[in-house]
Length: 612
Image 1 (cartoon, rainbow, N blue to C red):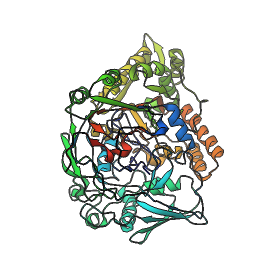
Image 2 (cartoon, one colour):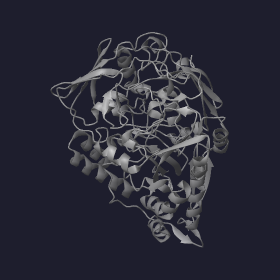
Image 3 (tube, helix red, strand yellow):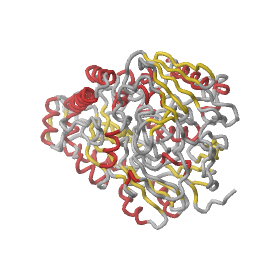
Image 4 (tube, helix red, strand yellow):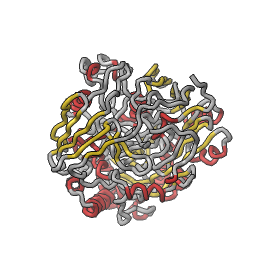
């Protein structure tokens, strides 16, 4: 049985340059650099080799995975509707993980406009870094089946749940090795967990582990996890949040000092499908197949090279001419890309939605601290026109936290449809006056806001920024736009003393709705909750939804959350978009599913690759 073996590590801030498919197994969303998705080493594997480029029956033999198909799969999956785990059960895998792949060889050439920040899985929150990390580190005691989104064994070949539902025992597969030949054991999991829960190590998603009472290695291959009380998403979270690090290497090194811990940026002992050969920051990263990879051995493609280029036009041209096997396709280039003779464009509505927004700084002292200013900004921007013109029909409007594809979607929330008169009225309630074409404060000073985005290479973001600037000028608000390099953007976004009013962001959400709690929690300011949103009622509703496993009860709580957040307007909600990826036709073995195309990347192969 095949399945998605690469849980994207964190919640996503922005349009994607890398193919990341966030699931509930992984922590929430993660900041992503680009609106369109192109799979980068979607590390972590897949099942049986694929002889032809054919689609599963679930997808009705089409290169495009429709929103209707995705919505149906998500609706019926346990990943989306987390229920109380079945008690007193044992689940055993019969999957063959030892038969080696047979289409080995060749080099895959990738191109991107933003580089990773670090290889440290627990100190980063952006998808570019998660993509690199997924190349070299394997994770997931369980994974999601790529068609049904049901949990199936992964690094654990068997797991059981106690009669009271509070003890989970995972039995690891024997024979899994680190790249240096040492065994991967339960002690690696336990040691990593202990580092992660140490508050001094500042894991951004620490709150997602608070439901765990104990996490112990009973022996080399048995891991016991106990929880305090029933928590609906417990199985997925405990099975996917910990990516084991090699204890025998890392225990001798400081956790968060790259000057004294070379593993943070040059990992030498890894568990994933690839090993790092060389990383020249902002130039390139080179990976080679890991012969000790535990899931059916080394991936088919022997070498994976990522080149960092100045902008998306250069990246697209490299794909177009065949210098690269893939590359970012902006919405305005999508029609042309579909016609390229050497490229196949795969399209899908992600099971974990990619949605874009404008974050509004709610801290005291900023104009956007005022509720009426935030609502006024939402009314002032024609989000329908922006969605259509910027995304070229490849996205749909979104008015609150969950898109239509989610089973908890609430259509009955304030949507702030374009209305300049209402915008001006809201600003009036905040003490501003619209006179002589300017929005002025009580002292007669025109309102001027700072809007920033990253990466600076993103044509889509740039277009959103100038469009927003134009709309706000119509109601007398001036906007200063600043485009930043990706890592600089993340630093500014997560600053404890920010100097911005607005930013353009995006989340790659999680299939299970509860995990989105992290971006609204006060304790996650400023790392995930960059706008500093604080609403204790919302936090209480999330807590209630997570502790009661009745589906209708949970749905009602999540729908209340959507309405409250929409009313509070911490974001100008824009749209959720289709994902697409252009791949050179020499790359075979690609199968689109509800999880996109990167789920089985280890089985991709190059048609002209020589047989060893």
